[in-house]
Length: 171
Image (cartoon, rainbow, N blue to C red; front, top):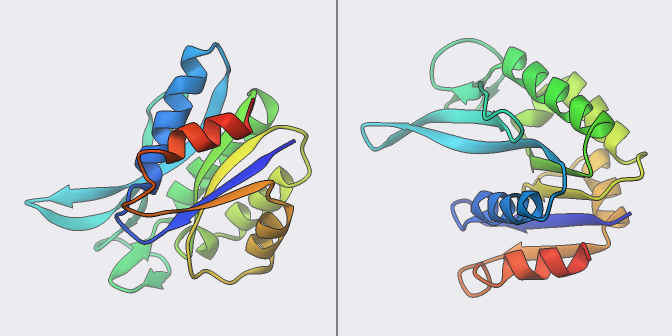
């Protein structure tokens, strides 16, 4: 089954591309499940990140400037939020046609449970679309890159064409 990897600079539109692909696939009648991560802003300032369950739109904190947990820059990773993402991804493994995981990044990888779940995804027979942090080095990331049937580096020039390229690879 295809593993499609999306990467690119921060803020270029990786999550937007993946969410657009998920919507098109749902319109085609496929069961698309998984998580996406997005910025949380207050007063035009980024204060953290959250996970969104693609099936329910339920959210959980990934990281914030307040709270507790392992530190990445100015953010504290919410390990309970990572457990939420693991639960959603395990449900996707069991009950979906296509799995979406945005993103495999340094914040998410502060959770051992998340890393284990990512490893499980490599051993299933379903299409996966994942966003990989462009500079993260980790054995699990190497496996995804090596098993990928398609990788695209999103940039300003190709971000409008990227959804069609990904959808073509899933046909």
